[in-house]
Length: 175
Length: 175
Image (cartoon, rainbow over all chains, first blue to last red; front, side, top):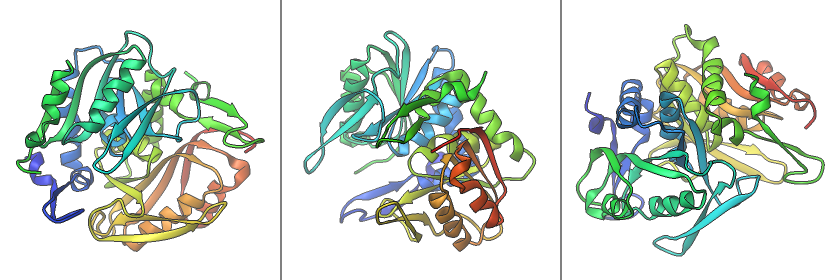
């Protein structure tokens, strides 16, 4: 099946001119979900992935299933104030203002192999913050896997300039 | 392995007298995560589960992996305002004030079998709201599976009084 066909596009959401790529229709489609997890995991099957890191909240969905498929652990990266133990944090810039993500300081060991998984990469601002955050733990980031790439927004290139190999399943032109 | 040993307890979080059960240490532990997904899924292997419904945000982790293991779809139940398409919504009462959860109105077909998955059941307030929300779709709720049960808080009994079979993996006494 074509994964792209399982993704719904909602024009002018959340504001005029934006073509919103709605991943929930892929999650809800059992064949598409199974296929997406297999394809996301495949490039990392023999890479000795100790942990998958996923970003709240949509990254928790694909991330944990990929962790299960790879037999690795899952490390949640959350919005500030949600994690109950000692954390590292990383600020990043949004279109309006800034936000902060956190990770438990003891969730990754120095040198262990971690794979970033998220549903979509656009400008790469959140993914860049996740890379900086993960580097504070001393873990070895072996790559980043996304279901959807919006290549015109440059996020994939931004990560590759940071030395992070990137794999994506589906590309959409435009914003 | 004993799943219970993989869960960290943080005393007096988020306020004095509360023993917070931190599931992130189970997620991060690759053996514990694999075992938890297998155990959560096992009672539903032959129950023809069409979709797993998970509640934002921690329910997205276990929920999607269980969906993948069962070969079913995953339906996200989100906080109000996060889903981009037509939704049903359900209010529920918190300790202070109220909150609202939503589901895409077209995410489940009438009569299809849906399984609720979440990390923890305490008083069952959120789970009760999820049941009411799912019933608006016309889907058939075949059960609810949780990693952690706090039986003294009565959530499991509350769901069973609503006609929902409940399975849990680990029990902790007290709050």
